Length: 132
Image (cartoon, rainbow, N blue to C red):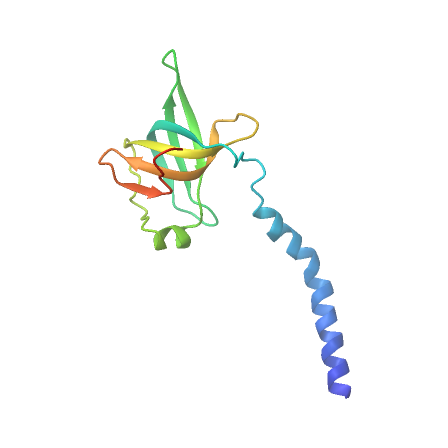
């Protein structure tokens, strides 16, 4: 009986000490800055692929009307998840021209959440439905 009480006290202390650290972990995965009700399609030139945890980033240049070049940051899942879906650190090479589908930022910032990509050889990664 005494062992059960001690076990419950230890479990309660672990919970009380660990609870404040749980919120930042949950907050990290919020994607409220992206408008997931919209999918935009952009044609872009790859600047670099950042194969890092906790999320992979694809930096691309988009040619705007009038000739200006705009840099976009595209967030994707983590390397472990993406590698199981066929991605490799060499999937995006600097200079590649790709067509990306992303959930855009709600505030109009040139960035988005990765949905899918079509490469110049017509291969795809991610979700690439006939209609965005």
